[in-house]
Amino acid sequence: MDYKRTIIITGGAGFIGSHVVRLFVNKYPDYRVINLDKLTYAGNLANLKDIEHKPNYAFVKADICDFPKIQELMQAYHVDGIIHLAAESHVDRSIKDPFTFARTNVMGTLSMLQAAKVYWESLPEGYENKRFYHISTDEVYGALEMTNPEGLDSPFATKASSEHHHAYGTDFFTEDMKYQPHSPYSASKASSDHFVRAFHDTYGMPTIVTNCSNNYGPYQFPEKLIPLFINNIRHHKPLPVYGKGENVRDWLYVEDHARAIDVIFHRGKTADTYNIGGFNEWKNIDIIKVLISTVDRLLGRPENADIDLITYVTDRKGHDMRYAIDSRKLQRELGWEPSLQFEEGIEKTVRWYLDHQDWMDNVTSGDYQKYYDSMYKNR
Ligand code: NAD
Ligand code: TYD
Image (tube, rainbow, N blue to C red):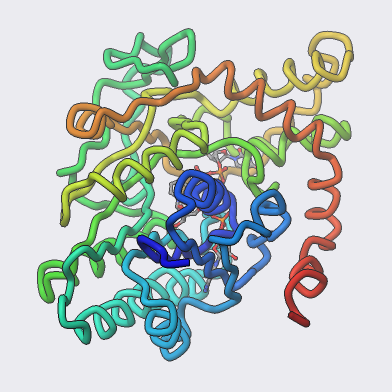
C-alpha cells in the first residue's frame, strides 16, 4: 500500500508514547507509523498488544543515540514526520544518574535532529511537508511559588479542572517564560528543547515544541506517583510521601495529551511552542487521599481503611514546589480542550490498574522485558 505519510514515533513503548501510537495507528490507517524504541526499563511492548498486528504499524528496536541507525531508518522508510517522545523521564533517577539523562535526552535528541536534517536536505523538495515535533515538559520552566496554600478557584477552569477548581497561586507557566530548570531531568529536557529550536533557526527545519504538565492514566510505569501508590494501597504497602506532601502538580489525563499531540502535529504553527495542561492543580497529599478512598471503595474495603499507609519520608532533593500550566494559547489557536474531568479520569485510572493486575505484576516482576524476544526476535 502507498502510505500518505510515514512517521516515526520515538518512545512509543513508553507511557505517553503508547497512547500516541495507538491513536495514530487507529485514526490514520493511511499513515505508516513506526514505533522506534530502545526498550529501556520504561519501554513495554505489552502496552501496544491491541494494535501490534495492524498493517500500518511497525516496531523497530533502536537507540535514538545510534546516529547511523537512525539515518538508515530515515532513508529506508522515507520518513516525513517525527514525533519525538523517547527520553529518560523520572526525576528521582536523574538525581542519582544524571549522565544517562544527558546522553539520552540531549545527545539522543541531537542525533534524531541531525539524521532528519541530513535525510530531508538530501531530497529535491527539502523540508517541504516535513515536521519534527518534540515533546517536552512544563518542568523546564522551573518552579512557581505557592502564594495561596489554601487554594483558589482556578480563573481559567477547563473540563479537566477538579470540582474544586484548585489553583495555588495566580501565576502560571506561559510559552514566553524564561527557562529555569532545577533537576538534572528538567535541565536535560531544556537543553534538548534548545537544540530543536536551534535546528529551526539555523537550518530552517520545520520544528515544533510542546510543554505538557504531569500526565496520568493507564500504562504508566509504577515508579511515578499515581500508579505506584495505587499498587501500594492495593497491597497495603507504605506510601512514601516526600516532605510534607504539599508540593503542587497540574494533572492531565494521558489521552487528552495524545489528542493535543495529534492536533498540534497536523495544525500547529511551525517553529512555535504550545503549553498543554488542563488547569488542574493538586497538592500531592490531597491526590493521595483521593487515591486511598477510591481504591478502598472499588475494592469494597471500609472507607479510608488504608489511610495509615501514608508515611512521610525525606524530601526529594531540589523538589520543585508548584507547577501550573497556562494552556490558553492552545485552546485559543487550535481549539483543543481536555475531554475528561479530573474526578472521572482518576476513577477510570484506578479502575484500569485494579483490572489489569496482570500488567502490573509483569512490570514489577520484570517479565515484561521478555515480551520483545517472544514477539519479535526471530521474525
Ligand atoms: P516513559 O519513561 O514512560 O517512556 C519513555 C520511552 O522512551 C520508553 O519506552 C523507553 O524505552 C524509551 N527510550 C528511553 N531511552 C531511549 C533511547 N535511548 N532510545 C530509544 N528509546 C528510548 O516516559 P513518558 O512518561 O511516556 O514520557 C514521554 C515523553 O513525554 C518524555 O519526553 C517526557 O519528557 C515527556 N513528558 C512526560 C510527562 C509525564 O507526566 N509523564 C509530562 C510532560 C512531558
Ligand atoms: P512524579 O510522579 O515522580 O512526577 P514529577 O516529579 O515529574 O512531577 O512525582 C509527582 C509528585 O509526587 C512529586 O511532587 C514528587 C511526589 N512523589 C512522592 O511524594 N512520593 C513518591 O514516591 C513519588 C514517586 C513522587
